[in-house]
Length: 357
Image (cartoon, rainbow, N blue to C red; front, side, top):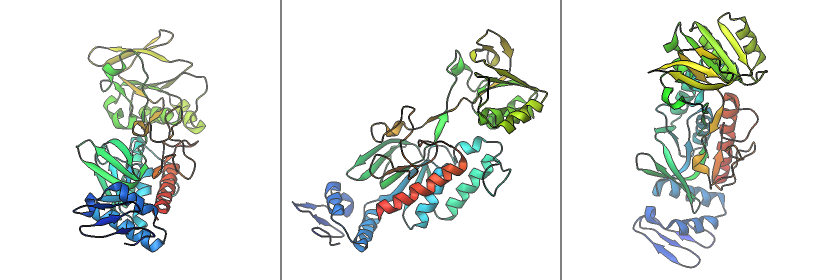
């Protein structure tokens, strides 16, 4: 491959740079610094395409690696593979499809009314797989930029490399941070009503939170449980008025505003919650829905984050780090919904394709 001032030769390749020559037995062993120097000298689209072919096929470097297989990650994967680039999606949860799987019902995704979050997530996954997207169940433990190449260390000890990364790792559930919370997590305390609600059939439970998730959880549990106490620290709820109106119609739903949970008690399993006014409520289950925390630990020191840990990026999904794009709930944005996550994935992928070409 001939560039303006550099040449890359094949099977036992030699990279000629402006100030020297790097010899290697195979292209995969070529010094990355010399490769990146040669890359910067490439101007014509035809030569750039040849460069991409060499990088993808001779050095085990993917065009794009996507971290996270929620709506944002899978949407990005579909756009990347349709652009003819190599892409691998890495997801730490077995066959995971993101937080959407925790939703009992999704009724605001255009064209697909009244579908469970699990089924919608599975349809996204099946769509991506049908187009040839590779999805790997693994966990990225370290992400490092090295001379315009991204190196990923995985929990199984293996490593992967890519010319660019789309980060769509999503968010995790915030905890109450109250006394004995860890002790009773999985023994009465849950962060997913859809996942665990059935265990509390005909029992008394409480939901903590004031947003759409908390209201939806309470509504879902009211069909299963004997009594549902919804506890919110403010007078007004942030969630949709329509959800709150439905809750108020349920005779087994009890709304407690201007209250917080101070402590949880029990023996082997949760038996009681204590509010900040020292009122005790006997419950078998406590469902926590107080918000999410962005999973951006990997990006600290790499990309610019806001005070809450979200990746600072505009609607173009471009981060402060070269070759790193972000999509979905981890990005600074006003609305975090399935439809906006999918849109982010499309935009991040489009930006990645333009970056590579």
